[in-house]
Amino acid sequence: MKYKSVIALIIFGVLNGCSDSANVQQQAEQTAKAEAIKKSQDQNQAFDNFKNQFLEELWAIYPSYGVYVGYYQHDDQLSVPDAAEDAKQLAFENKTLQQLNQFDVAALSASNATDLSLIRNQIESARWYRNEFKVREWNPANYNVAGAFGVILNTDYKPLDDRLRSISKRLEKVPAYYQAAMANITVPTLEHTDLAIQQNTGALGMFDKMIPESVATSSLSEQEKTQISHNLEAASKAISTYIDWLKAKRETLADGSARDFRIGEALYEQKFKYDIVSNYTAKQLYEHAIQAKENLHQEMITLTKQLWPRYFDGQAMPADPLVAVKQLIDHLSVKHVKRDEFVDEVKRQIPIIEKFVIENDLLDMDPSRPLVVRETPEYQRGIAGASVNAPGPYDATANTYYNVTPLDHYTDEQAESYLREYNHWILQILNIHEAIPGHYTQLVHANKSPSKIKSILGNGAMIEGWAVYSERMMLEEGWGDQEPELWLMYNKWNLRVVVNTILDYSIQVLGITEQDGLNLLMNEAFQERTEAEGKWRRATLTQVQLTSYYNGYAEIYAFREELKQKLGERFNLKDFHNQFLSYGNAPVPVIRELMLKDLDL
Ligand code: ZN
Ligand code: ZN
Image 1 (cartoon, helix red, strand yellow):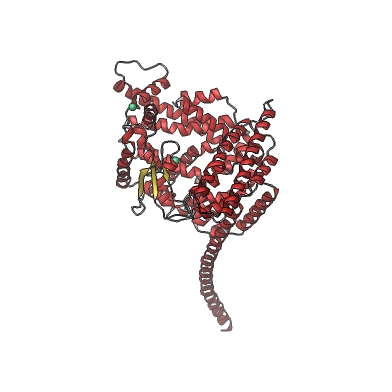
Image 2 (cartoon, rainbow, N blue to C red; image 1 turned 90 degrees about the vertical axis):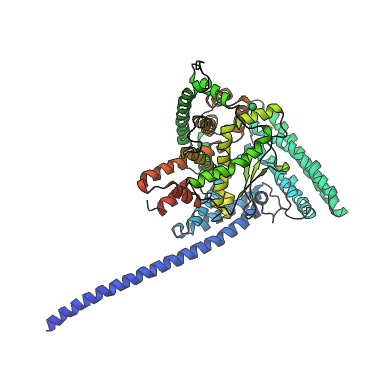
């Protein structure tokens, strides 16, 4: 009995214990779940607070950067690039990194997790630019104050008199700014020295003419007018002194002691890492691009053979197949709209493209945020072309405009050359890229979970990569009915971004000559000499930026193919696009990681 009862007790105990422990476990699970939700809420709340404080501090330390994105609270401040400023930036970077490390990324929402990665990259990048790249020592074009003054002068965010008061205060630091610039520069490159001389000479007009003209029409008091005139003179003198100093410096560099504008492999790889944020190394992307160029050439040759009899009946194809391709492209390019129909044609196409996207179930469109196609306002007309004007992060309710510049100011010859470039086929691809489902559509999706961080620190390679990806995707899905002429033109267009990547790497890392660069652009990418020379110049003055379009495109395309493999039958193109775009302007590798996690892959 005793024995029995002990057993019974044990059994009871065990049973009881079992159900007890099951309860405990359940409770523990529930508690853990509740704690996780609570933690996630706390973490996200804390992160939202951190972001606001981070941006406030960022604009206080970088007031000009703030002015460019529409944050005007520190518009009267100009930071002087000296040691004290360095120390301030460094302290801010250290503090921010420490704060970032305190967050549990796994507990953050996808939107906050991507914001965190963007902030971290921004901080690490700023640090690298200062400590390793040392751009302030060798790039004199790094120093130019005119741009932010221009934004303050020409943007109507408060009355002119108040803007001029901010300008007057801001001007006080200009002499110290250029003193610091001259102290920082050690051995510059010839190319960036020339650029700095040219750009700062151009900047003088801001202080000698544009601001004084506005002061004359203002209602500032006589005393204020005297003060700002005095400050303008001092600023102008400081810039002139800088220009003279650069010219003298340039003389001393003529003996070959200037720094090479090519940054070399080690710095290039690092800069690529921070500017692009890619799963590829720069070298891998370059090799990828070489292969892509070959593939495009082969496709273009095949299409040319197919189309040749239609356009050159009875005429033999040139022996060099790339010469034949060029001849056919030139021949086809005469098909284009009349110069005074250019803007109307863009307006006509947008709704047709939109209809195609909807009918083919390619991705969600948002009729509540329509795209307004308009002629580019006069004050924004620099070079002709088309671009999407996104509302700034501090003005998110404004319209999205598709600015198209009419060809009014062109000579007949210039208009003809432009229209041949943006011919019947390329114009369609341009509209896809800029508007639907390119930049405009991407922007609408990104704004569904608005993030100031993503609009300010957004990843350029993802943004441009999406627009380039959308071109090919549209053609693959049947835009243009697989017309071989359209594919030929598309291949030429795509070849440009591929060859930009090859050119940039070849110049900056492999050290090719100008002649080799021009040959690549003209003979292998079918570009005109003026365009090729412009591209060469740009590639000597910037590094890595030219690779961003192709990198983003290649990564998005590869990711799509990867998901097709992994999901098989379950893969749906529309779902892929909607989900991909829902993460906003984050780097493609970050989106990929989050998406694979969300899809449980
Ligand atoms: Zn023509
Ligand atoms: Zn673009």
